[in-house]
Length: 327
Image 1 (spheres, rainbow, N blue to C red):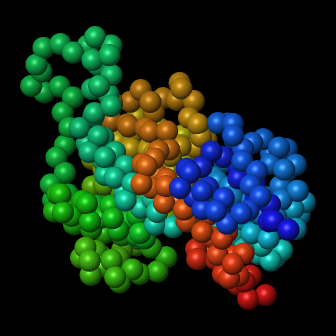
Image 2 (cartoon, helix red, strand yellow):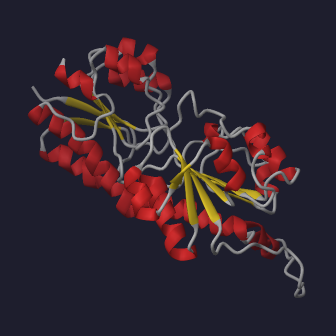
Image 3 (cartoon, rainbow, N blue to C red):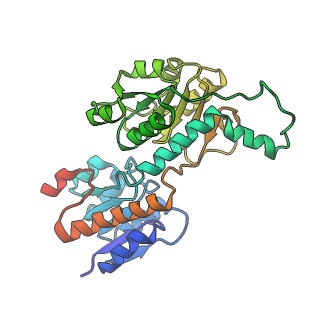
């Protein structure tokens, strides 16, 4: 009997075609909007596997109702929408797509850094609002990035690529804070591992590239922003709840930091009247870090190959909870 795979969104054809070639019985959700939790649960109950993404809530209650699932394959590098502990207890492997979006996300972080440094989004709006007037020698001045200090919070794949961009383009000094040292990255970009407080105090740019965990949730709060330089720029392309949004708003408004570049917010989507959207030194994007053809195609392929590999060999190339495969 064919294995039934629930595909929860309109994922790129690159991966879907691989599943079709393997003759799986696919149920494709063809609406642009995400499924409601009720729709997701109802369909998952009749399938053997789920190919899902961050907008799909795979919590403990869902998993208890769908303990029959043989594999969950996540179309994302993050997986905080999935209760990994519950899935592991039930013996359900969870696949994900690491590194597929590293280049694309690092590009967004790098671009946001430049945009904030030069007030780009705000200056663009002055044209739209008919405010492009005479040359002002002292108006809306930005900062240059050459030989500044970059502080990476979470020096993994994406953080390393951000560091390489900053070092190659602007000869930046690289500091980082991790749970464990990244000696490979230290050699590649001459990075120095420092404590969290030292990272905040010494960095001109603080760029977030860690996972969202109970330990990192709201770690960038008002207390943290007060420890940063008044001239510092905060960049978050990881997960919105890593920073406390009201505290960030206050920090920029009061000049505790220069500004912020965000590809992630809390909540998502951000309200159209959020005060951050109207601040000169803030640039916000609607979570488009992986939004390149190359990244999304590769994510789709990896998510599909996790399912194919599981059913063909019992192995999952990119797995969050590898211990379940030995049980």
